Amino acid sequence: SSPRNAHRHLRLPSGEPRMAAPCLLDKVLLLGVLLTGVGAAPHCPGKLQQLSSPNCGVEDPECPVEAPFHRTNISVDGAFRYVETSYCPPYDWSCLSNQKARRPCARKQTFKIPLEPTPPAAEGIPLGLGWPRASPAPAGAASADVPTSAEALNALPSAVLGGDVRPMLGAIAVLLNGVALNGVATKLSEALPADVRLEGSDRWVDAVVAEAWMDDGCLGHLSGGGNYHTHAGRWSPEQRIACGLPQDDAGQHSPLLGWAFDGHGLFGPHDALGQPPTDLDACGGHAGLTATGESQYHYHMTDVYPYALECYRSCPEPSNNFRFKDLPCAKRAAQSKGEL
Image 1: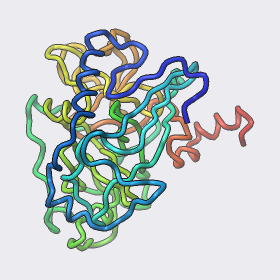
Image 2: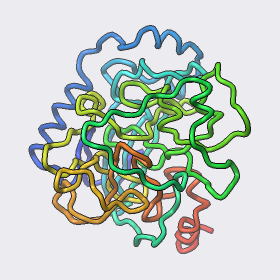
Image 3: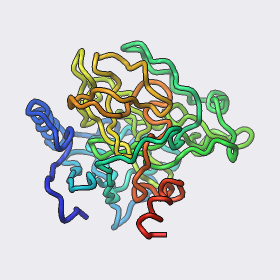
Image 4: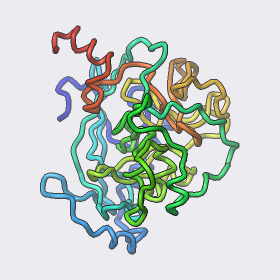
């Protein structure tokens, strides 16, 4: 539910709630009209018919596939920004695919984003596969071909399951449109189409590549339990608008696209010079000017691995993902509050 002491309340799509400039608010209103206007026929009726296994119920009904869509609400108090979402995307999801032929379900969730992130950790809190950051992609570069064959999927680069690499599963951030951003890794067994057999032992793979065959037009798909999410922000300008997110302006810092659960902002692919940043740290962020005109640590979503976050620079809010409670920083915070 909404926090009682919230002093400001907005509906999304939106920019930074407390610093939105008038021109950005105009874009927000336009996006709101586009996303909640008159309903239209599903983009992929054939695929929609194939999603024939009922998995939603009375408590978590199926997400709307046409307008009016669910709205995402933002409120702020003295300690947190609250992002209330239903896990439903504010756009047509009919083009997605998955092994279990399931559809996205509406599940109310309020994510808490710290307004004051904890002091940055020297090494960061691991989230990904521990792979090095790829070189920035040239402007307008096309994404790699989507692997769909058994041979291509089983040959994907991987990390040993149960080894030193322990990726964070589930949501690690939330976008302005209310869609959850999940971690970059997945088990290969959970990424294979129903007619593809796992060869050898299960292993960790890049979810953006391995699960690309599942994606709808906004690069989103379902978890095994039916939660809609995305892993990367490799959207074209046209997709940004259709997916309820602000576009970049040429020569300027990319706009805010959401927040990581450690409190730091999540921006598009360009720095203050309007270019892909070349100084991102191992986590996927850096300190510098943002689209709001402030100089602060922040993350960037890019076209190459790890696409967003390889690690957290600060401690995430534990209530956003049950897996966070086992993090050393979360345990220390709980002890300091007398919760352990």
